[in-house]
Image 1 (cartoon, rainbow, N blue to C red):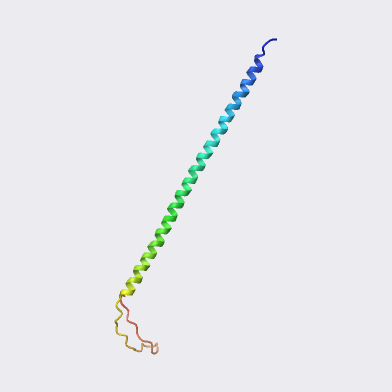
Image 2: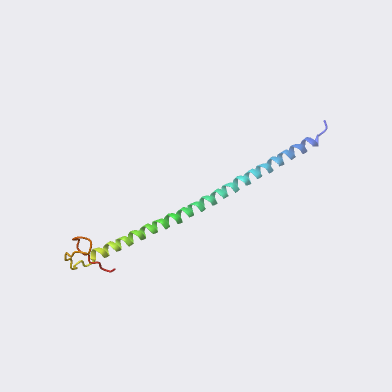
Length: 100
């Protein structure tokens, strides 16, 4: 019985082709995973920067408002509030304006 080398050659080519296709698929999956991790990292970094910036803005507004309220509470309001008629406004008293 003669030994058929064409069958061995075809089987070898199919095996090598299958391995090559498997390596191509594995490389595609690894590259896709790497791209997904990079995109997730960039998204998380963007979200962290935006959220911390917004929190800093809110805390700054709160601190400014607190400073304004404390300044208004400590202001001396011992002004002269005599009831005087303003021209054209009837009997409303004049208001003493400070720091303006």
